[in-house]
Length: 251
Image 1: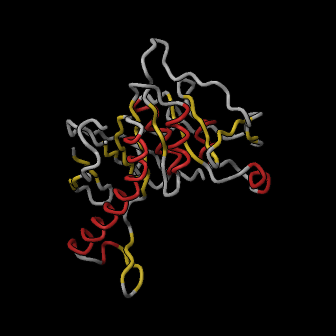
Image 2 (image 1 turned 135 degrees about the vertical axis):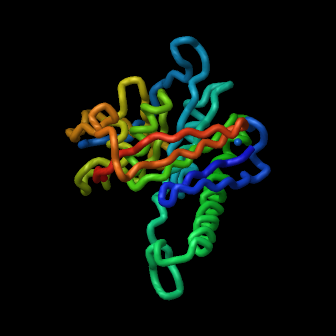
């Protein structure tokens, strides 16, 4: 199995091998309150077939993956680990941070390879949790400046019906900060066909009333943008697809 990473900054594609642990089809608000007893969640679609689960992961989301594996991933379902990363525009050097245009192609490529290795290392701990539970797992890498828009657009492109995302904002911290977290914003603006669960410290958070947010969904976003993202989707068949995520500040 290979992982195809498309770099949005220079339009070049780079192929990198995924570590051997991922084998064939692996087996690779305003107010939110914590619920002590989590509600019963349907793991199957209307047809009775297992529903694939998409999990948005960052650097510290082991608890999010564990919760999804324990509560929403049904036998036979596949997990997709979704990781959003920013395009490379500047690179740290011994003389400070420089624009990639100031460096040679070789220097830029070395940096990109290092970042790709870091991402693969990051995803391995999540892949390992799934393989231990004998769950088929694949990875999706989204290159975008805006996590919320990237995921909202991905929901529409691949028809995600089950999404799990983490937050570090506890209920007490939420009262002190204005505006929704990324997970709250995605939950509010996701289409009706997509069920979104927000996880904090290994527990699901439930909204007791809908936050008042400006609607920004794929249906009312512009159709073109200079700031798009590319999706790298690791599959046995080495297929990948591309979709657009539109510019604008949300969070």
